[in-house]
View 1 (tube, helix red, strand yellow):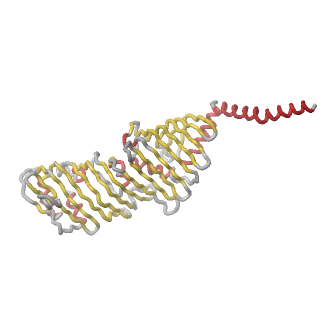
View 2: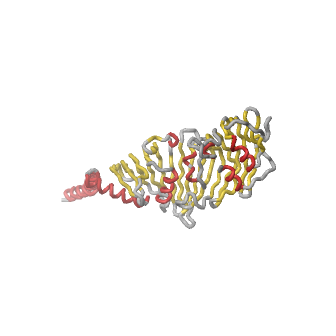
View 3: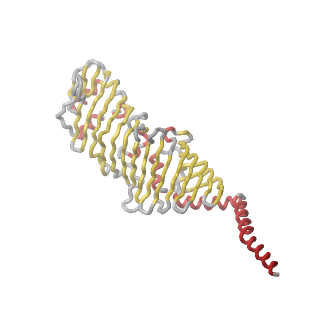
Length: 382
């Protein structure tokens, strides 16, 4: 009788300790692969991600691999207010730990929207999350409007969230030292977002960052930026109460974009701008000092006398051609609200020359002249 009771007890223990958990786990795994189970899984993830990002989320399929690891397929994120598609990902691996969540995104596709507009959505919807858990995100390939973007290859992102602030750091590019952008946001009043860009010797299309500047800038569609900048603004206000500072070099500037006229022929050619310092506080420029250099272009003769007079430059000769070819442009300038100064070449055979052609200088500087800031806009707007 004693052995029989022991056998019954062993069977009960086997059933309770092994068979029942196996049946439960197996049944749960089978349920997760049924249509009903998929609907339940998708609903759980959609609810969690929608609440976390304050957006509308749609998920095509969920693969439950084991506790703490799940794969999401065909994920679409749309703006809750406008319904605009923000991005979609074909394959996301999610690993959940006690203190950290890792997201491995194989391919992310961003809709046809400006980078700063996309960042603004990110600030308003994602960086506002107040959680103690850290998120780490890796992104394999980035697609913009269905086309691969070479400038964004080899991208990696790190997101850190806490109760008082949030921070996203993104590195991308195939160079040994990649480009880097860091976006930080405070959650407590006064709420502010700060963008810090460091190109690390790489050239970045200027159009990528122009929306984050405190004023509209059009330097041509081929202009590139190499350097560092910091821009601080209130959420959703990219042109209001902006604090901004930058150092670096802008290349491939289209001069006809800076000096537009009705016939588009005031000046042509390309130039580079070496920015020593650019500072803006509360959406007001405080200081701008830089050196502009250019080669091989044309300038309209009828613009020269007025330009020389208003900017207090020396007009070095009356050339009869309607459009004058020049072979060198060199202008050092320093600007603040009280006025600005212009200087030409600092050494060589043509010291003081700002613009010259093969026969000599066309425009020269007056080193001691300080020009009223309001004069500059008047001189450029013919």
